Image 1 (cartoon, rainbow, N blue to C red):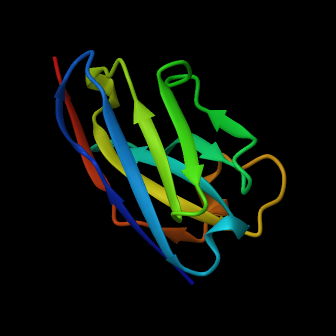
Image 2: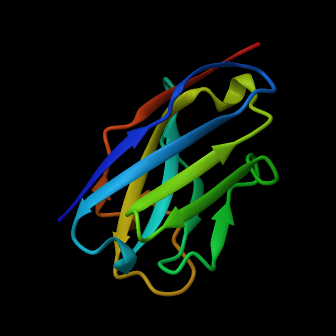
Image 3: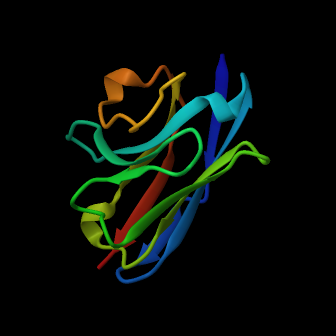
Length: 126
């Protein structure tokens, strides 16, 4: 089992920045690929970014590439999402998720992630 707790969400103006954190406890964090997903009202949950167990390999959706950066600190059992140049369309609840024992390229599919946090709200005003 992996327990995940997100933090860092809030209200920001367009063009601003936020840094989300996801603290993990329970099973060995370093054995999990980690992902960030988001869900806006009335929309399906969508992939944002993912990072491999070692942190060497990352993956981003086209909508956030060049603006968001995913990173992890295995010593602190934490994964981060640095979000810059935020846009109103980035408004959503952001979730972190853990994919146990995933090797190589991290998955973009939410179906591959076994454990999820409760989410943190990000609101970008225009």
